[in-house]
Image (cartoon, rainbow, N blue to C red; front, side):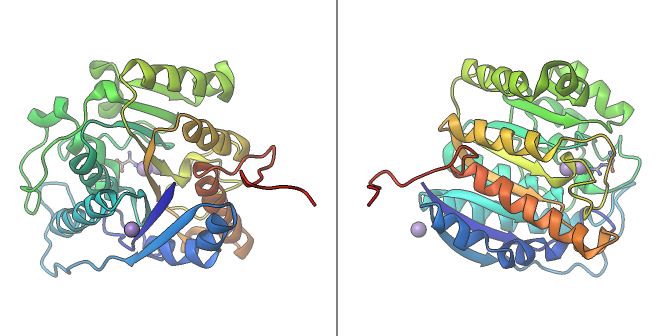
Length: 314
Ligand code: DIR
Ligand code: MN
Ligand code: MN
Ligand code: MN
C-alpha cells in the first residue's frame, strides 16, 4: 500500500489560530519515516497553498465562506490527483471543514464511498442551522445528497456537487451534537455510535457492527475522517473544541486497526490538531503523537507486533 500525504494548513473553518500548524507538526513527529519503517511506501506531496479573501464578509451566519469554498476546491483537485496516482491519501489538516474537499475529491476519483466519521461532533449543521457560523461544524451537510434542499447556494461553492449518501456514513464517538444536527441524524437514519453506544457495546462490538454495516453497503472504498477531538482531551488536549468523556487512546487505535483490516481504506483525514490550544507542551506532544499513532494504525501497525513478509530470523 502506498500512501500519498497532502498537507492542508487551513484554519478558516473555525476561529482559533494554530490549527494550520497541524500538517508540519505531524510531519516533524516522524510520520513519513515511521510509515517507511513499517514497510509502507509513502510520498509527501507537501502543503497546499490557499488564496486569501480579504473581504470575506459573513453570508448569513456563516463565516469565511469564500475562503473555505476556495480552499476545498483546491483540496478536492489535489486529493483526486493523488488518488488517480494510485495512493491511499492522507490529508493532514487543518480544520474539519477540509473534509468537504477531501471527500469530494476522493469520490471524484473512485466513485461511491463509505465514510467513517470519528469525532466528538457530528459536523452536520447546515448554513441555516449553525449557531456558531463555523464551517468546520457543517461539512457533512454539504456532502450529503439527502440534505441538498437544506443547503443554500454560497459563494465559491458552485463547484461542489453532493457525493455521499446518508446510508454510506457511520459516526463514532459523538458526544456534543446540536439540536438541528440530532434532528438530521434521526431523520436520515444515519448509523451513529455515540459515546453511549461505545459504553454499552464496547469498541470491539462497535467496530464489528461498523464493518458489517459497511460490508452490507457493498464494500465501497472507505474514507476515514478522523477529528482528533474524538479522543478524550486528557490524551489529545491540543484541539479547538475539546469535549470531556471521549474515546480512550486504545479505542482510537482499535478503530484504525479494524478499518485497516477491511482492506478497503482508501483515504484518511487527520484534522483539528491545534498546538496553541493545549495548556502544556506535554499536551501538544501527546496530541501530535496520538495523531501519528492513529495514522500508523491505519497503515498496518499492530499492537501484537509486525514483521516483514520476507523476514527470516538469523
Ligand atoms: C458546533 C461545534 N456543533 C458547531 N462543532 C465542532 O460549531 O457547529 N466541530 N466543534 O468540530
Ligand atoms: Mn506516485
Ligand atoms: Mn470535526
Ligand atoms: Mn470535533
